[in-house]
Length: 214
Image (tube, rainbow, N blue to C red; front, side, top):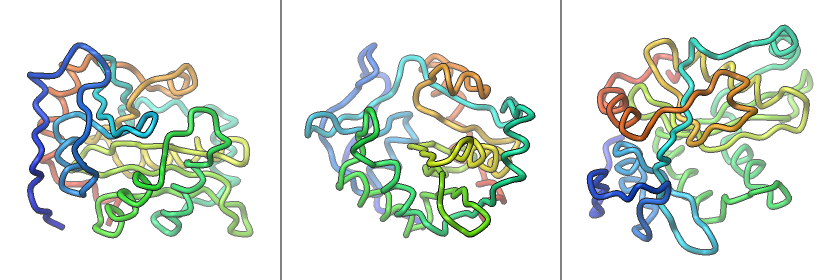
């Protein structure tokens, strides 16, 4: 769904050589989408709305996802659904007992609104009885999927959601993980410089979205 343009400007040419590149603005749908198109994303800290564009960006090329034998067995053991429990996935990711929890009520409401508008999606991992035990959510902008957060309440449940995400994004797309970690690196996530990342997404954000979200 087309959105009104944001009154805020995100200009990478003016960003500092630091992961945090801006402070303030708002969480209107148009503002968030404009930020992602320019390579930034919101993440509050100590009550202040900050915008980030890591100098070393974590990215996953779907074809590079590493699926071990044990993960392949987990894929067969669980069931995945898409966009059936978006708010529940966000709430699980926002659990304040999780280390480094940063998703506050404003972020939650903003992404639920983007989901209602068709921009934000979730992948849910479920047991055979339908219980939600893992998942992830993020934004789909053209051929770019900007991952926001993931969670698991069962072994490999978040990884299973990532396998499904890679399948849906497809070979022509890219998954943005914001930063890389040793855990993500073990799954195939690599780091690009900010310059390389911005250059690569320039065409992706204007490409046709993958059929996997239809």
